[in-house]
Length: 387
Image (cartoon, rainbow, N blue to C red; front, side, top):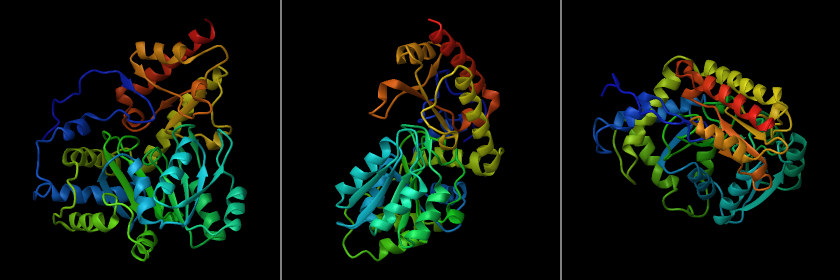
């Protein structure tokens, strides 16, 4: 197939914290003619996706799992494969998704203990150390970028603290809203699991659950004493499938999303094999993030993150100014052809709004997405403040 001459239909600019805009090449690849999931043409495409997934998170030996589902399926994989009933898990809470991950763990029989940061902050290293000294945990989980607050946790520091205080614990990072928009060095930082999804920084339509497990995590899985507590999410089922496709042969457990894999392949090729390079991509996300946050700061509008060090580079969460509501911001932007998101964190849901700036919107300046967003945001915010 060739993308020559293909342009996606005109549409409103989607700048929520996921799904995000996708490139013409990715959308065209998603329209690939229907293919057998065991055909000789498809097998190397799936195998390449597995290999390129490692590249995005700078891992040489991590084991990717590419499975039909949302990012939520990554929680199920962790809870079902790495946590046996009755085992303790420490959940570091920086927003809405900490609660959800804890609920998933307990649904599979694990015992979740949460350490909660105040809204807009990440759990401190001293709090993590205190919790780890109080109890023996099999797994420590945290959300790299919590989409509900725009808070970025310091993944490297968290792993260092866990390794120093509880070296046998597995460290699991929910990176649904950070892979490909934030720097992640899986091997260097010694992360055990990274779970994500296709529709955010990876620039692919929704529907693919993506997880990378370290050798240590796989060994823990293989040495468990009780059966895996899920059928569909079982690595016992999926590990042979991933290994088969990467080695160049087809295998079957459940049908993969063939067209979505083609789209993911197109996006990964752009991310890992084209310009800008991955380091350049991360730099661009930081620059655009600072630009958008600067617009808000110039107008006296407060971020949800309480410290710039906690602020994500792929999204921005902003409080409504006094006397301003969602109707004054979200609706007018929509009328200008720009779709942003309202609040998600239950404690402050009606007090703030969220903007996503990831993927092709950030890295392809010729599209003009960022300029359109910045100009429109300035106009709408100024109008709201002077109404």
